[in-house]
Length: 325
Image 1 (tube, rainbow, N blue to C red):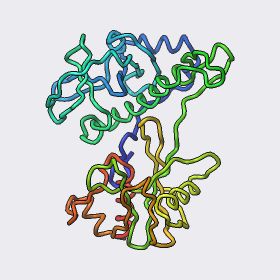
Image 2 (cartoon, rainbow, N blue to C red; image 1 turned 90 degrees about the horizontal axis):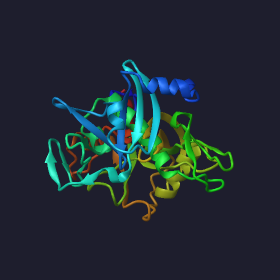
Image 3 (spheres, rainbow, N blue to C red; image 1 turned 90 degrees about the vertical axis):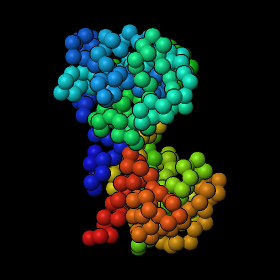
Image 4 (cartoon, rainbow, N blue to C red; image 1 turned 180 degrees about the vertical axis):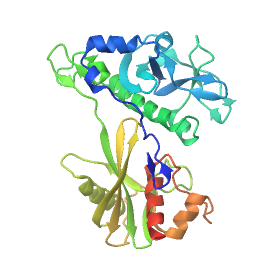
């Protein structure tokens, strides 16, 4: 969705999720056989794309998509103005690796193909989003598909008795035939916070970040915690900074694999950093001018902020915008 002049990556899903159709087998079958019904297809957590002129499209006619290989899972995502949309999961071995090659804007060291469909392209969702290779609505649909299909791929057995479970409710539940348990997909909440103190904000970097990138601190919400409590705990654990007021700003679907980012702005009570080196490689305070330079790619130490697909970027833009009022 648009926020402070930015489009938050993976948000803006246009689908009516058709909750009422999920328990109706006849209605599901009717939706699936419609002439305008389409599907997105994932293999090894990556979307399978077709080429339409000069653009890529993740949407295939459902009948054609079902012919790509043995279907592990099929989920009803919803319906947009053009018709119903399903998500299909192919087995990992349906895709095979080819030698690295340059494909337009992508240099993919792990290029995969479906051998029987060489014209189709398999691309990483995060790269598609960061490069703006697909419309925002299609990226959001793929995010929904990636999260729900990841759940099915990684939860084939009942967590109560260990028996094989099966997909139900249009793909939005798994049922155990042995003990009768019903299991629902989980979404893991993560707080991400721009910790500020007057005209400075606290940014850190992990060892696996690209060289020079700094971002907002973040962490998973634990059992029995409010979002505000999680913000305070994570900031103290990672940077040794006590936090007072916490304000919600915005949220973002984050399908890597199945999280929702809860974006907050938090008021630091001091600037005395005591960094947890097991969590962070570096952590420091940045002025508004430095953050602006990082976003614009002109920081004198070549530090830079996350790209526009990350909610961290929106949090920083929000803070800069408030400073100009």
